[in-house]
Length: 247
Image 1 (cartoon, rainbow, N blue to C red):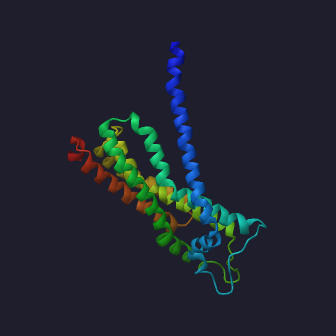
Image 2 (cartoon, rainbow, N blue to C red):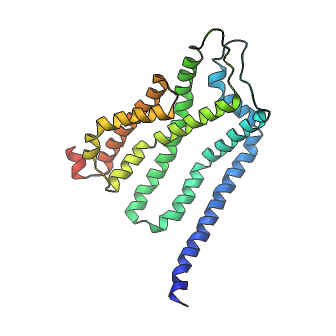
Image 3 (cartoon, helix red, strand yellow):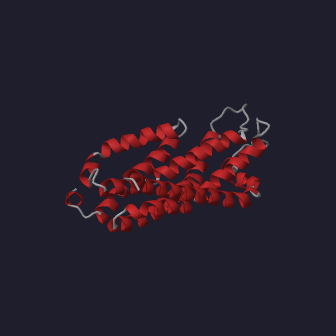
């Protein structure tokens, strides 16, 4: 057997394992999607409740596209299936990467994976139960009196999915901060010194990811800043470095 053949075998084995794990992830999403699709309309009613409850009397959400009554609940169910399958997807990713990690990296990776899942779900919950009632209450109350608020169901779904993803990712900031410090890319002292720039960056990100009003931007920017501070506290507690103790 030639050296080139021997060196290619591990790569082929890794690619086969990666394909198998990706198939498991796709299968998990399909298995979750199939029973959920039966309740697709009920799921859309639930996801639209923060806006529907605030619409003026005599108005409702509308479908401006012929296919929207089917594809909007379908897309919502598919995305929800992906979110619910995230623990298994991350487990497959962990199973693929774990053999190449050192023992101390494995001990740190498990709580980081669990924290990432919980923080992502918490970010989505925060958006639904806290942010949506505030911003929809604001938007439905500031329009002209002669304009009926009748939101398209597909436009609404795209809007809330964008905010779900934004808040889910933003709530990963403590984990990202801990990874940056633990990998040696930066340290707690440097992050503490960059706090003013981080605060400005939070409001810039809030401006880009939310509707163009101060309330929506603040509802994303302020949690981002607080989560950054939480990440610094986590890094000080878990990464016992001289920089963290003197910061």
